[in-house]
Length: 112
Image 1 (cartoon, rainbow, N blue to C red):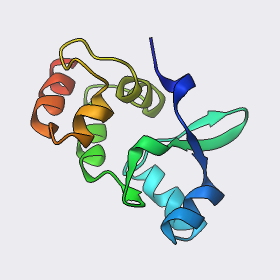
Image 2: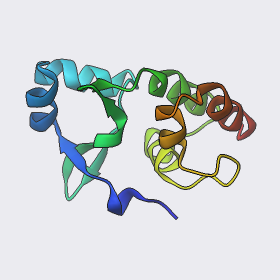
Image 3: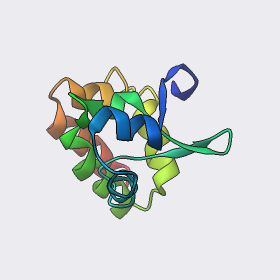
């Protein structure tokens, strides 16, 4: 079960305003997996928990790459970050934000 329905979602214009980056830079961050996005009601949106201090959570990128290497699509990876992970006792993004990068990446690698 995912917490995506309870997540605050930010559009590209929201991210431009929040980060001070251009729309093309925001799209590049998404393309390069520094941020993950999903279409919500037809609009590309990023979960607000993927940001810290108005910038992408730095640990998100490497973990997203690990998941991509394990065969996850970006949509599947986004769902995984927002879903409760029993082995972590919380959502992977909450664990990353709490400084548990190595533990989250071990769990992600085990999914391969």
